[in-house]
Image (cartoon, rainbow over all chains, first blue to last red; front, side):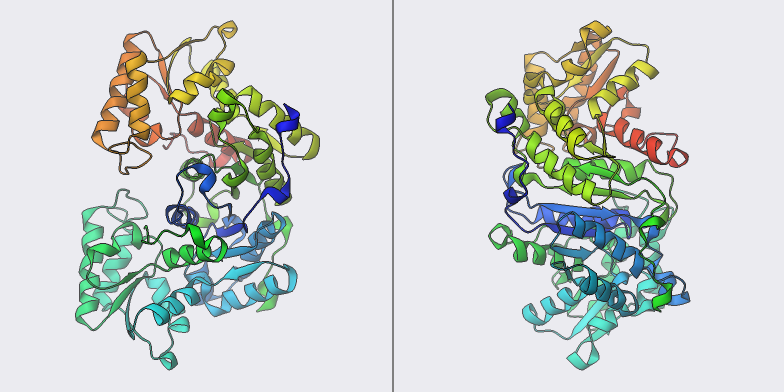
Length: 264
Length: 264
């Protein structure tokens, strides 16, 4: 039987995709699922080769660092990048919105550039902003997110005023509703799957409310929100940065396998 | 800010767990989810450090190989093991039932033993059989699986007659029903999430039918079946080899974090 076995590295036909997950763990899995779900595949072997590093124990809380300082999570994120690089990954992504804030992402990117040759990190929020510029002729973007994301202002760093973007956030009460929809012990998405109507309804209401206030598209700026709503149920574009970036990674490494219609 | 950044490998406090996935891709994700779901964690940083290699492009179909020959999937599985080993993984598992058949798993284990020092593969079906021996005083075990698994007889290799085990398989019509519940384009679990009642009902019926025919416990011998039924809804033990092995990996690497009650 031995002659039939081959473990030759050259048999890996495509670039290996890596996901830096663990921030949080379920968001990393969800990102992998978006890659699988958007790949044209009729059998296991058609799927893209991917690796996930879910090593949260050494990655400090991103929002906590941005608001109160302490150890930069960039170091722990780099540790995951280093592991993926050793395993042969060429294109990677960090599956966390807040981690893309410049005080974290810039030192992380510098360490990667200096130490990991041939390892490209695709920036999820830059990819999302570029997607909007290339595909949608709009300037006013609604942002649904948790309080930490609003406070960190990470989306303002990528959807810049000088590029003509106007970010619209929910009013104070709406911000509270969205935060609850994600975190509530009684009905929050982080705890209750399938998603409870109370969480779903708050999100739907706030999407329409942002539209009323001038949003031409709405970003789901928290990895839990896409679990509650389907983009196709709305008349305005609903943007999931994870989905956009998962599709970008497929387009980069195996464009012929990218499904035409985005699959949530 | 630089002085606050540390990417030091020694900071990884626990053994790194690795999952050889891609066989199929969703089964690998599901295994990771079982690790996360059975870990005592109140924040991201409490979760265990894990890596998933989902590299299906070089792993041949397991059932096809067992029934018709061709290239042994062991070679591709070893390639994933090699990548995880390079990344620092110490304990790994292969998230596929059929891959545990001796003609595949034996050469795979031999390659790992000879080439990857410090890398331990936990055998999912051996772990499941050991769990039954240690925790349940039973001999007659029902087996729900797809046709390929019955044909491969992989469960008979681990639940041996000489150890007193009697495996009970559904009758021909029942085997067809379970296969349909997994694969049917109209209502199969592989295609339709959340699980359709028609798939769920077939599985529930066949569990009771196996019990009527003498099964004291039923193994869900296909990675899709645990998505359709909850063990706690039945009066006899329902065994999910993936869940049992995910909990075993937590017990091996961070026993203080293993949740008492299994979480599907």
